[in-house]
Image 1: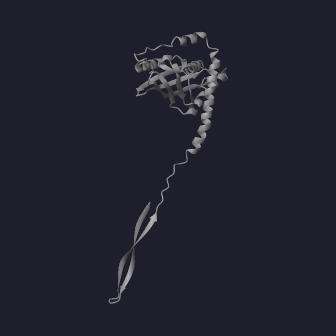
Image 2 (image 1 turned 90 degrees about the horizontal axis):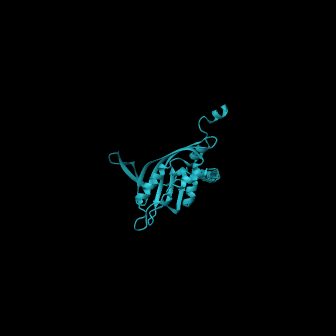
Image 3 (image 1 turned 180 degrees about the vertical axis):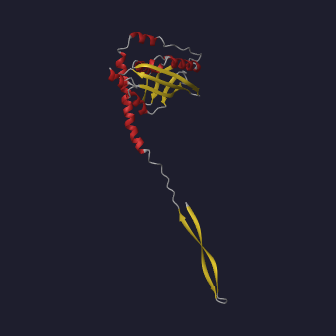
Length: 241
């Protein structure tokens, strides 16, 4: 960018006949070059450096909880497994061999009432077998693995409360906004509490859910801290005992 600035100077001129001085303005033009150098702020560099170990720690916690859930599943009574199997409903197909989206959405809403996140009691027929499941910790494909993880996670919970707050329909997906809280059955009885939303992407041919993407409105490390924080009064009860 170039800016032109004008400066006026006064130069005296002497007329010899009357010995008087006449002042005349003399204008000079000077050009100043202004350089604008825009750079993105670099304050985000520490955050990026910290996010990598945080993500790694969260993944370790996620896979650790999955393995813990698998181990706990061997101690779960068979009656609970049979009860979960009874809720594997089947959905009807239309003339084209696809499932009507309205039926799939209603099924998902009913699954929320059964707290499928922690019970594994979801309608399998509403999802593709190779459906992708993703959350802040990672992603994988496989409906059976998701059901197993949900069922096993429920065995680690003492009590829970899950509620579908709002549902939104879009062209190729539906979005369910939810609120969730639970008390883990660990010795220190941690309490998990969060809100978030899940995106359900529908396959164009089958009408079933092909992607199930969870978004938690809580920072990743905050969830981990909740898991490690003892419930209120835990140390007092432990001392009294």
